[in-house]
Image (cartoon, rainbow, N blue to C red; front, side):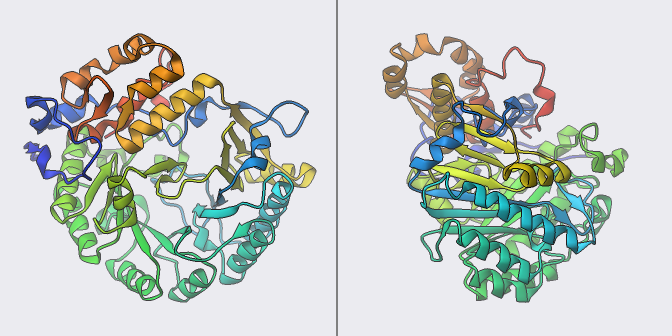
Length: 483
């Protein structure tokens, strides 16, 4: 029997400041499994607005206005490079990936990434790169020589800098990352390491085909700290096949013993109709919804009892971590890599399926490796779709990011921008939000709409009320569940 006992929201440690107002008795009521289940349905994660599923076909320069034209005006820049290669298949994974043991594919892929980077040379001001992220796939699939080739090639085009005032991060598979590669990464300027743990239970690991020991993770964590990595984060997933509350608590306890700086506790989105690899998971091992909610509650309580700060959604950080400090000081931002403390004026995404953005909109590359390579060799870029922001898009983009990052909307700013009283300009949205007000998840004063402490669990739901493209469509099943 699953323990579905409630616990009070005061057990969840949150940053001080925005979002801590009280709306009366409901704001301190227990955070129950019944309440969580009511808001647990599919919902966008809002790493962008509009969300990427809304993008439309878009080609390279054809004389019309395009969002990348705004790159010439940026003062700071983020870079993302997608490395899609992995040595083995993890059954739960929904990333754009290629499973291969043929290393030559990766080497030729980097040739195309650097060709694509050249396309941006004349389109982006030589603004300092304050944030760089290698994602995948498994970026550490690359050998040390190709990691150097990639970073040196990017450095010839973009203004890469090394130091504590930039954030250069890389995702790594602890099963395959060599300790010696940490030396190379630090030399190249990386100061943040993200390790995909998921779960330490052997039965769960076998069910998802990802066997990883605590000892492997400990060696890499200690090695990274010894080499001066300023932040180490772990990814955990709840709702995986074979998991239950007790087993997940053991994983969390093992993680707490390793004391990473940041922890992402993601909900597993089981969508086998969309992701072929997930069809290899035994559906009989999948925990029921009530158990998944109980797992989320239990794991979150264990993390916050240990002193981690709940930032909102699924992110936790040690109180002395820069991300927790940014949340406390109202400097938290959000992009395609999640929460960040170093937002830039624009992001250039390189590689298959990578997404870029500027003040004017978004653009995305071809998803498949074949189409990506063909486009790069034909025209130097691989853009296939995107979105040019309207004025209403910009308003709602700002509004949604204020909620997601600062847990507050300044009604006066919105009234100045729309020329209407907030209650009139956003009447349909407020009607959608009424249940969240009733449940003590949101509150408002004459000047502000704010997220309460217990409302942090439901930031996606609050943001979705303002998504003009979401309502009246039949696409909710495309999104992962909130819990």
